[in-house]
Amino acid sequence: MVLGITPYLRFSMTLSAVTSVIRLAKSKVVNYLAIFLIIMFGFGTAGFIIYGDKIPAYGSIFRGSLEMILATLGGIQYTEMKAVNGWITPFFAFSYLIFANT
Image (cartoon, rainbow, N blue to C red; front, side, top):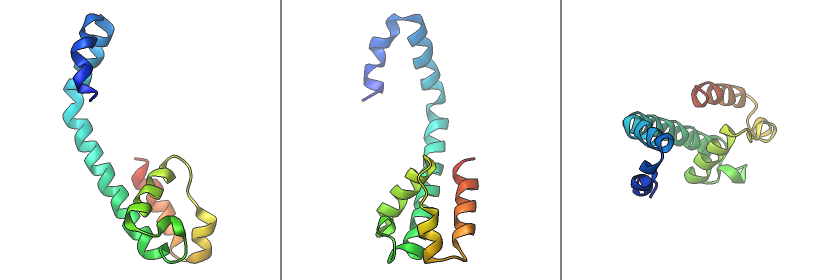
């Protein structure tokens, strides 16, 4: 959808430069997105296994993955997670912050 409007953006030199940069970086962005989604799915699956029966946000693998994407934006539920499993939550949260924010 976004790439469908690129012919209309060629009228402006600035927007033409932006579209050419997007075109050149497309493969790298797609690769980064694939790695990001794999990491989110992995942590979402781990969250489902660890917290799925106690925290509704991790009730399914999809919701766990969505919760991990929301945690990237700063919404991690650390106190609830620590109440469920006090041993693995610090490792889980720390490793998530290292992998997801790099």
